[in-house]
Image (cartoon, rainbow, N blue to C red; front, top):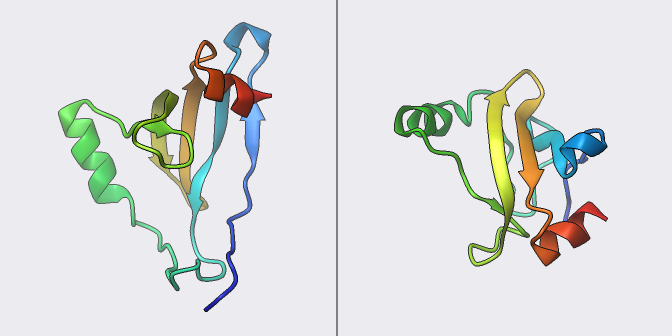
Length: 102
């Protein structure tokens, strides 16, 4: 079994007037395989992004992928040469979102 690996994470938080807003890569292409041996290839998100765009929806912004713990909203996603770039906003009156921001 491979040791647990995480992708490098870079977040940029907005100025105080947009408290809780951030931009970051939800996933990046290439690199080392994840704990399941998967590599993410360019184009991997195109179909699901198109499906969400057609339906006028976005994935939920969850704490640690927990479907019962939403912490904000995704404003947009785009796939670029690096990976899946997301712009989101934490809901600052949700305790877990406040803790994540801190």
